[in-house]
Image (cartoon, rainbow, N blue to C red; front, side, top):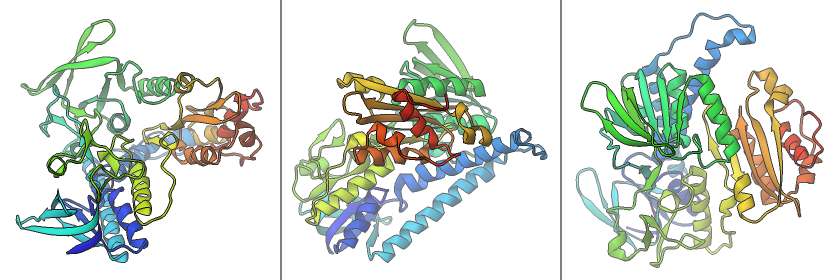
Length: 465
C-alpha cells in the first residue's frame, strides 16, 4: 500500500502530525503498536491529571470546615481512583480513533520497522509482516521511563510511572527517586491520599530542579510543610529488595552523610529516554546522538524521506512540543513556510499542588546569557482571589531585560498557574514589553492580576504590596 505519509507512533506528536497532513490533502497512515494516543493519553498527561484531581477533591473534603462546610469524614477508595483514571484514558483513546476516521487516516496496528524506500515493515499481533511505502515517513515513537543502573525496575518493588497508575493496593510508604514533574506529581498524589512519601533528588536544588531556584525553594518549603520528606542533593547508592521491606541507601553529595529509608515501594522517576532502538535507524544510517535522532529546523533527518518529532529528539519531552513539531514538520513537507519553533518560548507545567508553570529564562539563566535584568515578584498572599479561594501560597515571578524591556521569562507557583502561563507565552511571542503588560488592564479579582502586579513590581510601580 502506498501513502503520501506514514507516521510511526500515535502519541500527541504522531496523531497531530497525521491529522494536519490529512487537512493539507495528503493520503496518510498511522502505525501504532499499543493504543492510539500513545503514552500521553494512555499513561501520561491525561490519566495522571485524573489521579491528581481525585487527590485534590479528597484534600478539599478533608478541609471542608475551612470553607464553613461540615461533611462526614472523607475516605479514599484507591481502586476507584485508579479505575476512574483508566476510564478517562480509555475515553480519550477512543476520541483519537474518532479523529482518525473523521480525517480518513488509515490506522495500522502493529510494530513498525523502517526500511529504504521510504518503506515501513509492520508486524501485527499474529506475527504477520506487511510492507507499506510512502513519500515520507515521520518517526514519532516517543519515549519511556529512564532506568537507572542501581535502580532496576521489577514492576513490584521498584516501579515506574505506568505501574504507579495501576497498583492493586495503595502502599503505606513510598520513596520517589527523581523530583522532576513526574516525581513531584506522584509524590503529591500518594501523600495526599495517605501514603508516607519521601522524594530523593540528585540535584542539590531539590524539587523541580530545572525550574527557577525561587520556585524550587518554595515548592520544597510547601511540600515539607505538608509532611513529605524531601532530600535534595542526595544520591541513591543501593536499593535492597531482598526482604519484605525495601531499604533505600543514600549518600549526601555535599557532606558524604549516609541515610537509609525503609519503604514498601520505590518509584523511579528519573526522566525519559527515547524509543529509538530496533526501529531500523542503524540500517538506514539515520544519525543519532546519545540515542536521540538528529534533525534540522523542519525535522528532516540526514536520510531523505525520513523525519522525526517528539521525545525521540533532544528537545523538551512535552506533549505540546511534540504536537507543535508535528504540525511544523508536515506544513513544511506540504510546501508551506512555517516559522521554526522557538524552544525558549515553550511553557512547562507541573500539576502538583501548588501547581508550577514557567517559560523562558530563569533569573540565573538570563544573567548567564548576558542580560541586565529587572525582576518582579508578586505573592498570592496579597491576591484577593487567592485568599478567597483558600489558596494563597506561592507567587508570580517575572524577568525583564532592563535595556529594552524584553520579557525574558516568567515563573509561577500557586493554584491554577498552569492556566495562566499562556498569557506570558503569547506576550513573549508578540514581543510585548514590561510596561505594555502593566498598562494592560487585568480583571479583578483574578489570579491573573498577579502577572500585571509582578510586572509592575519589576519597575517599582506595584500597588498591592
